[in-house]
Amino acid sequence: LASGTYIVGAGSTLELPNSSSIVFLAADLTLSGKGATVQSNTASLQKSLAIISQGGTLNLTEGDAYTTTNALTDKGLLALNNGTLSAFLLNVLATGTVDGYGSIENAVSNDGNVIADPGTLLLAQGVTGSGLLTIDPNSTLELQGTVTSGETVTFAGSPAELHLDTPDLMFGS
Figure 1 (cartoon, one colour):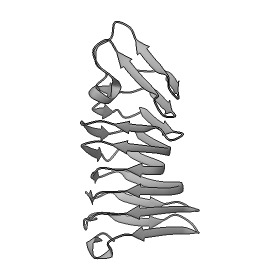
Figure 2 (cartoon, one colour):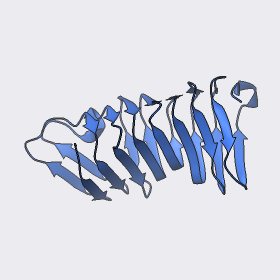
Figure 3 (cartoon, one colour):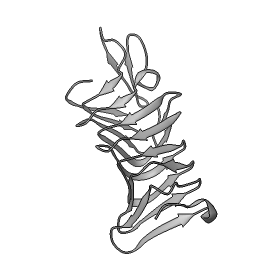
Figure 4 (cartoon, rainbow, N blue to C red):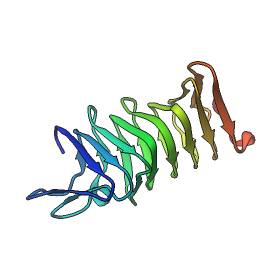
């Protein structure tokens, strides 16, 4: 999707006629609620999306669970508002941002900024890279896996909480 704003509600499908697989997302796409999906004539978004382009937004809200076996590269914005992402890998590049609350069930390679805001953001697997892990006011960042030494945790206000499920695996600063 190259441009525009799209909102798909719970249990709904946005069907894109005469289009090929959606590999790049440069538009603003909201999947709001369980069962919200986008379908082209060749594949669902979950089977084809590889890159959130700079300027693009994938917004997962209201308990939407986005599951894919692909690696997903974020050059734009992945917004979680009580959403869940489960991918092979999430690769957040320097221009990329993950912002919100919910859970990321896979490993994260972060050279951008992952922001817990305004609730609890769970990173269920390890975090590698040289990016920022930011905790906004009234937020919690919960880390369940290894965090490499290149990652930097920043408290952007108070109250903010960092929850380390395995503190001996935290090598970031």
